Image (cartoon, rainbow, N blue to C red; front, side, top):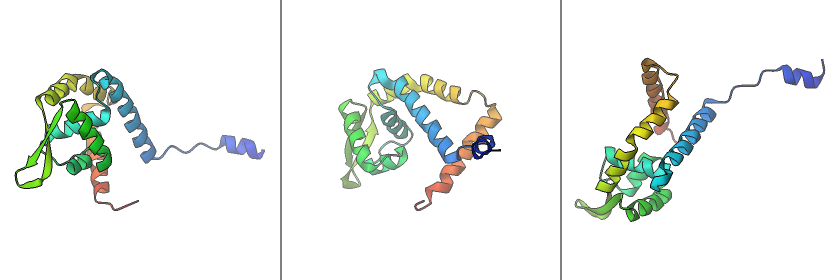
Length: 154
C-alpha cells in the first residue's frame, strides 16, 4: 500500500468541541444579523439590549462583560444604540462619575418586535432535540461557561 493510500484510508479526526461551538456561534450570529437587518441593529447590539432587558442600569464595562465584547467595542455599540434611541445614559446617583445605561421604551419595543422571530431561530437550532435534550444542552452550556468564567488565560 502506498503512502498516499494509507493517508486516504485513515479516518479524519472530528473537529474539536471549541471549533464546533465557534461554528454554531458564527452561524447564529449570521442568522441574527439577517433577521435584524431591516431594524438597523446588529446581532451584537441586540445582545446588549437583551442584557439590559434582564438587568437594567449597567455601566458600559458591566454591559461589555455581559455582552461578551471588549469595553472598546461596547463604547461604539452604546453610541450607536443611544443615537438610535434604544438606550439612554444617566449619572449613577451613588457614584456621580459613573454613567448607567438603561433600555428606553423604543429599545423594549424593538426587543418585543423580534422576540418571536428570535425564538423561532432558537427553535430551528434545537429542532432535532426533544425537551429533555434541550434542557440538558442548556445545562451543559451553562456548566461549560461557568467552568471557563473563573479561568485566567488559556
